[in-house]
Amino acid sequence: MDFANLHLSLSNILPEISIAVFLMLVVIFDLISHENKKLIPYISLIGLLITGFIVIIKMGITDSAFAVPSMNAGGMVAVDPFSSYFKLVIILTSIIVIFFSMSSKEIKDIYKRSGEYYALIFGMILGMMLMVSAVDLILIYLSVELLSLSSYVLAGFTKLRDRNSEASLKYIIYGSASSGIMLFGISVLYGLTGTTNLFEINSALQTTQINVFTLSFSIILIFVGLGFKLSAVPFHFWTPDVYEGAPLPITAYLSVASKAAALALLIRFIHSTFVSYVNDNGFWEMITVFDWQTLLIVISLFTMTLGNLTALWQKNLKRLLAYSSIAHAGYLILGLAVLSNAGISAVMLYFLAYLFMNLGAFYVIMLISNDNYKENINDINGLGFSSPLLAVPLSIFLVSLAGIPPTFGFVAKLNLFAAVIDANLITVVIIALLNTVVSVYYYSRLLKHMYFNKSEDTVTPIKVNKMDSAIVFILAGLVVFFGIFFNNIIEFVKNSAQLL
Image (cartoon, rainbow, N blue to C red; front, side):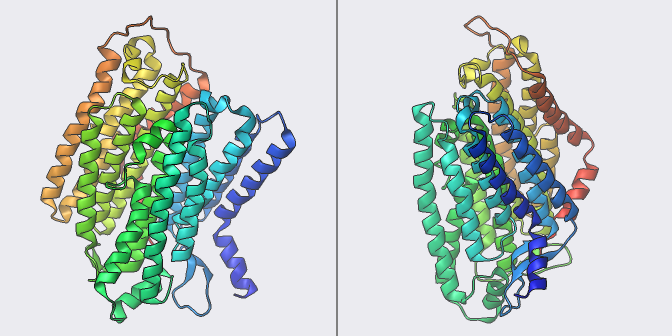
């Protein structure tokens, strides 16, 4: 690679370089500040805002980075509107989680180690940003591991209760197993095709006679690693325990940002490796070596059904939202199962709605939990009267999660189901609609506790500072605003659904 190409490649990964630089700044400031850690969250926010600005500038660029001269399929990193969109999602989520952390009692209790905490978050961000752009099996695995190693530590970082360490231990055991299985699948796929570049693998699958059974075996092994990150059934079993045991800001972060990166990686993996061409109607014509649609539909239906049914009897708020998160992963995979440009646009819109409503719900629960770590469903009894400034936004988030108008969740779900209907998957849509009805029940159960159940203890209003109130109401406002004025955001998402 000559100097000119190296310079171009480095300019194409400026967002990742920015994150790496601010990661080092956080570590350096942590080392020299000793007792005063108050500026570290603000350094983190500045780094995220600068990175977000760089991503926005590069939003319309379609290019690649770190091309190998001997290969004709581009580089290891794809730079396109699709990756820029998911990078913005990751950065926006990270900014909100930084505010989470600044208000969380759990994080305040480990104030002296907060530098390490924010450095690990930046490690996760770097891994996720590489994941959404990676088009090489080696870089895919390295980026997944970078994300995983940081998140394993963060899941048990506070060490305030036994379940913190339990969450971290379970996460690393299950995660390392899925990572090993994924690596084995990658090695088999490399052995079959002789390359790690996704575009060259695509070419090999179309021009070379390959053992279909061995290829299917390798694909399923790779899907295990990605399905684990997505909390897709049957790779979901870690989710409730880790979500319950991890600090609430990290629980919220894993439920959104980690899922966004895994989803973007899965979409790119399928699109770059197994799509022969896109027809005039926007549907993907797949290379006939593996039945992706059947696998995705089966996984999707099992994921949303198990998530919704298991959430029905949960009493811990974090576990309830964990199973809710599993159910929403099912809807997201369903959009991908359409295997069309419209389906990808619907998935991207759904994820943006999921970001606002899920982070908003977790934010309110964190503010409630700050009062002696209250996380039981009975702890929100009478909240509608004792703390209406928390109950009203939480109600909006729950209504949106259920997909009820006029909220962003309804618009996103309607758009998703329309894409599935266009693919003539009518039976699948009916099952998804029935799942939505089930979800309405457990979300409405939370509303019942807030407005119709009286607390057994003397209820004192939960004190919330102005910054937290502002963030919660901004998120709730966005959920309602995009539920009414949605044309521009849908158009933006469609323009961003362009893969290299």
